Amino acid sequence: MEQQEYHNWKRIHRIYEGMKNQEEVPLKDLARLVQAAEEEMSGRSGEWHNFGHVTEAYYYEYFFGGGDYEEAPLNMSGIWRLFGSRLEKQGQTKDAKEAFERALQWNPADCESLLALIEIYRKLEDLEMYRELTDESYDFCNTRALLARYYRNLGYYHLENYRPELAEALYLYSELFYPTEHARRELSFLREVLKRETPAYTKERLCEILAEYEIPLEASRETLALTLQAAKDCEKSGRYTEAGECYRMIYDLTGDPEIWETLKSLEEEEE
Image 1 (cartoon, helix red, strand yellow):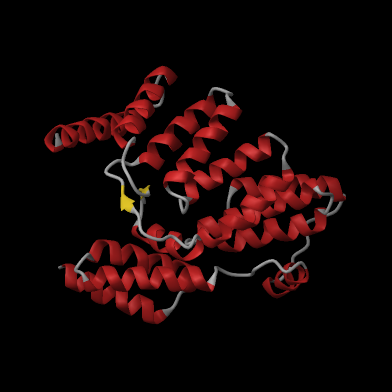
Image 2 (cartoon, helix red, strand yellow; image 1 turned 30 degrees about the vertical axis):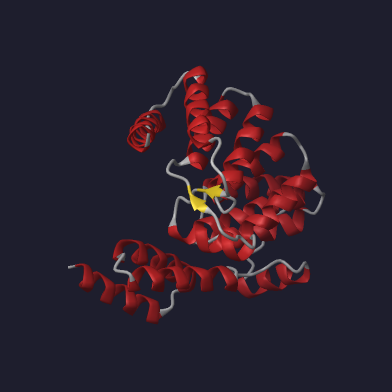
């Protein structure tokens, strides 16, 4: 039975990887994949999760108070997220919402699925859930790109709530972390709405504006600490590639020269 389970896992994983790399996959085929994966995991006692990156297990245990759980042999959150993204592409918004929610049950710290769910609530025009989940996503912003996305999402929320000046500051602040065409388009729109040029705010002035609304100005200290712990644990156990990924996340957000030196030493270890 164990040998058969192993073959089933391998088959499902192979199908998932193949579908993931295809631009168009019939929804009925994806639905069958989801069903097969869920059937493989059904009837198992205890709590099961799967994490796509080593840091996510640390985030889950800290931010969600995660206790004892088993690591699922299949990328259940990835399978559901793929299904959700294709459902959304086909305009099946409510079904996509349920798929992303299921992905987050398997991996509560999956920022990619959380951001996809946030986008669903934007389409459904449910601004309160949009804001609630955007605030939740902050804890998983472990790169500059993700942190910029957090500020852009807040910008959209405040724009829809008739606070264009604050939205403008948020879009400008996001550009300091990771410039995007999306932010530039929104700033162009705000220039038309406000009938003036975009102010040349300094970073200090932007920080003052955001601080007035108690919006965090940098990555979560808890997230950085958890990422560092994951890096050290991976390094200690000889998992240098994963350790390097974690250290790079920290350096990306902090520019800490000590982290850079650690990264260089780690690369020498790998050689």
